[in-house]
Length: 101
Image 1 (cartoon, rainbow, N blue to C red):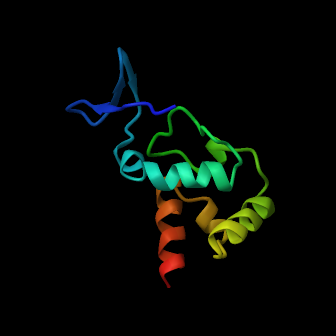
Image 2: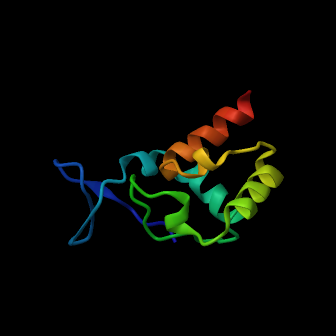
């Protein structure tokens, strides 16, 4: 499912008549998020909406050790507990940064 988001002048996200939390940063990383959903949390579709302030713990129920193992397996990089506690969009950036290093 590909949901289209539209930001209002206050930065909130509008989906139809519903006002959701801001998601500008997540919308910039939609492809990276889909890759993560499909390869780390085993979800072809992924969540319908992820706000900019969400963490990985808001979108999956995997334990830290399992998340780190799956990230290492798919991306070939090791993340820390601090990385996992970041906002999800920052975690996506961190994984990309580690892959480039």
